[in-house]
Image (cartoon, rainbow, N blue to C red):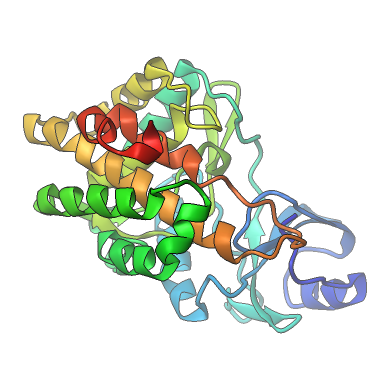
Length: 321
């Protein structure tokens, strides 16, 4: 469940009077996602998504996220920009939270993407990176490589409650990765979290790229590596479908064919994605109360994927045996 902040029908109806979107017909909380509170709102004119930003999304970052969405939408990308009110404002406050009314996009997110769907999604990421070539905004990656060691330290030996030896093993893997991290590669505005549930599709056609709340300036190829690690494994991280991963890269290569240097660096970038999501999920796992209305995600599901990208390293780590 991902509705942390409740909004009454009366409060929402009053909120909608700020916009030229018609009158409230219905509103339903959306269970997917873990970062914000989301509602599907239907009015007499259309459907929208109401998002209330919870503690993980800083109000100070919202102008960057929304300007990026406006830029991509203006370039014809299938992204959901915020609806502006009659005074031209996109960011509001509702029920004590920063809030935006967002354009509704058709389509469904995927649980088991096919190679054809992965090809289309990789192509969409490549088109997105093309579109941000003249985007002027910049935001540091709040979950970039510089944050992984501090997050590991905050988790501490509690990681061994998830798997014996996990703290020491992540420390070893992170130390080796930081020594070879390809920081010299091209950087641009990236999504940084383009999991299957953040891509909407109808059949094999991409109809929406959503949830840009980790968007930042970082290595362009790292964005693809995150996507590869997220799309080409099952939910447990045990089964790897190479055909899906290959299709993602093929779709992306329509816009940015991978150079020899990029191909050589891809394993490190994907391993970085494995460590990043292992750590963030571990933090949530260790710090989310058992009775919270949020389904905790298994940190080991991403840790297991490291074996595909760094088999020699994985063979030395007891928590992966």
